[in-house]
Image 1 (cartoon, rainbow over the protein chains, first blue to last red):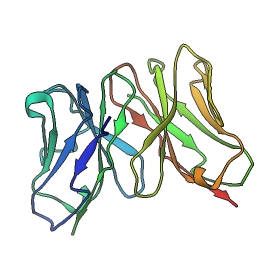
Image 2 (cartoon, chains in turn blue, purple):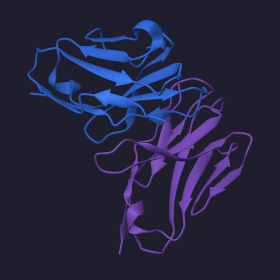
Image 3 (cartoon, rainbow over the protein chains, first blue to last red):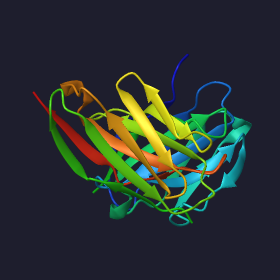
Amino acid sequence: EAGVTQFPSHSVIEKGQTVTLRCDPISGHDNLYWYRRVMGKEIKFLLHFVKESKQDESGMPNNRFLAERTGGTYSTLKVQPAELEDSGVYFCASSTLPDTQYFGPGTRLTVL
Amino acid sequence: GENVEQHPSTLSVQEGDSAVIKCTYSDSASNYFPWYKQELGKRPQLIIDIRSNVGEKKDQRIAVTLNKTAKHFSLHITETQPEDSAVYFCAANFYGQNFVFGPGTRLSVLP
């Protein structure tokens, strides 16, 4: 089966610009998670969708981050306006069971 | 909330030796503990996991042990090979909730 895919793989933007990241989960996976790894630190949770509903968004750093999952399929994560500290690798993961999560390749975001 | 610590942060072993990475967690409600391997520039890959009703699980050269009383779990890699070199992350969660990851261990297997 196809794995989790993310687009783009890399994005370089200037401070103040907007970037939208996309995640396509494994087909049939209702659970979709966004995580972020900043500067070689631990992978930190951002939010969790169950189908199109936000189950938990306690990890979202501030209101510059907006995640959507219309129709319960793919998800987007928009950062507007981007700040320097938003740089990092953004991972998406999906699962059908509530526990085993399969990760995408990540989007490396660099904010200059 | 849950907090996961992981040690060591870096580990170098000779090819053929064993490697052990240890994690502790704080929330006794956590009941699922996966280990992910991330090679440079690649996605984190699940390599083994353990649920709270099991004390040990083994898959070829990889094993994980769980001590629920002490709230710690460990990854054991035997007969290490250069391709085992990567960053390893442990994580903990309670059924259906998000993972809380440890900070990672960079394992280097020296030929």
